[in-house]
Amino acid sequence: MNPIARRALACVAVPAAALAAGCQHQPRVVIRDLPVDAIAEAAPRPAAARPTRTRPEERKPAPAPRRRKPRPRAVVPAAWLHQGVLPRPWRWIVIHHSATDRGSAEIFDRAHRARGWDELGYHFVIDNGNGGRDGKIEVGSRWTKQKWGAHCKTPDNAYNDYGIGVCVVGRYTDRLPSADQLGSLQKLVTYLSLKYDIAATAVIGHRDAPGTATECPGDALHAYIHKALRPRLAAVRRKAGQ
Ligand SMILES: [Zn+2]
Image 1: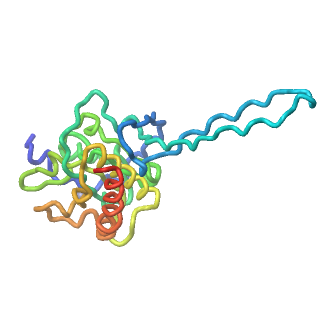
Image 2: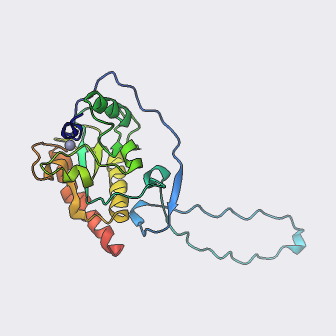
Image 3: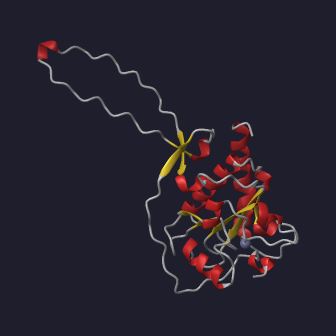
């Protein structure tokens, strides 16, 4: 197969009769090496002490329990970690919309293979409720292998070689993704930016890669990336000392 064709642009139409993605339990892990407030979840509250029976005359006021504010923990799905595989030297995060109403990692994987590509071209897919649960972050098979992407063709192919491809399912020319999708996008991009030291300015829409001729990721999502996502990420990175 022609390697150029194999890495070609990945904003594609998908078959309408594709299957919905299954809803599977995802094991989660605590990340200890990242000060990531933006992807933090509250630590579980300690279990309440079990009351003990005492006679009324033995009762005395119990000392106030020392309460420590639980530290937030950065918790991410284990599938994001590509355990046992060395990270690729990523330089960009490239955000796409699917330009379809429906989609999931499985649906796009099938569509991309039908085009003769090796597998799903993106590294992550964020579902919209039509093909997978709204806001669900799906991990593509090439992320697990830390393999180059097939989503952002440019003359030197640099954005495929070193760009993490994130596809937000939907068509975002004149409206934004759902709140759940935007929340997931923010969490994923923040994690990837801190973990792989990718600057906020290197978080781009597909059309921002020089040499591309596409409207992807749509005017509305493109504006969101530049006016909301990047400034928020820059603030998180400053706070984290990056
Ligand atoms: Zn695109």
